[in-house]
Image (cartoon, rainbow, N blue to C red; front, side):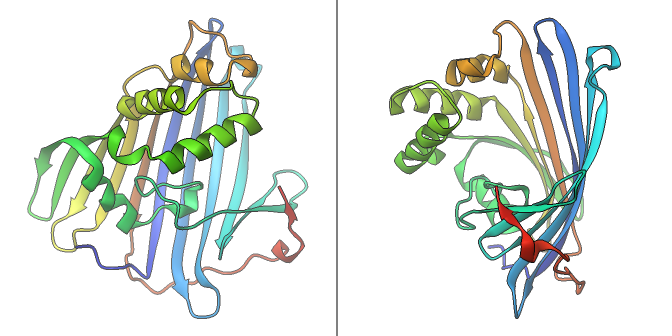
Length: 251
């Protein structure tokens, strides 16, 4: 059993590789954040994300920094360039695999719960203070009727194909089965130290079926890898409320 954590820090990186219409592109990101319970604001968190895009012979090379802050049921983001703050509301209770609707919804309790919905769980490395597990998620345990309804609603908002729930279930299950997870766990506390998620299939094949109007051409490929590292559990550090978020506008 994982005890509730009052504070922690997160760092990590992500890489997405594209081949669209014969053109190779890559997006990478580094992120670091801090999260804690507070007496006056409840759970709060902040994260800085640096992203880079490369490809098309240098024509698409660019980088930007995004700062994100969450408090209550709102996630705030400071826009690059003009520095304006925008926000959207989310349900902190909506979790899947410890990673919910936004990067700040990551928590150790949710991450360890992935082991309860895992299949093909395998111990791949162990030391005196840690153990490393490799596994995949069982789609039947995480794709619920509520999940299907919300995904169907999201597809409609983003111009996706009008699919029935059974077609959506098949597509979501295919995406989930492409994902391979590796988790490093501390033996004493049973808290996660590192979580890596990577694709072992072509995401584009499914995305084209779901959102054909997005202009994505079949025949290409999309693959990704994402790593979270966790530290400073229970440490005492501040997570300050950024100046300017009181003037934030809805996304």
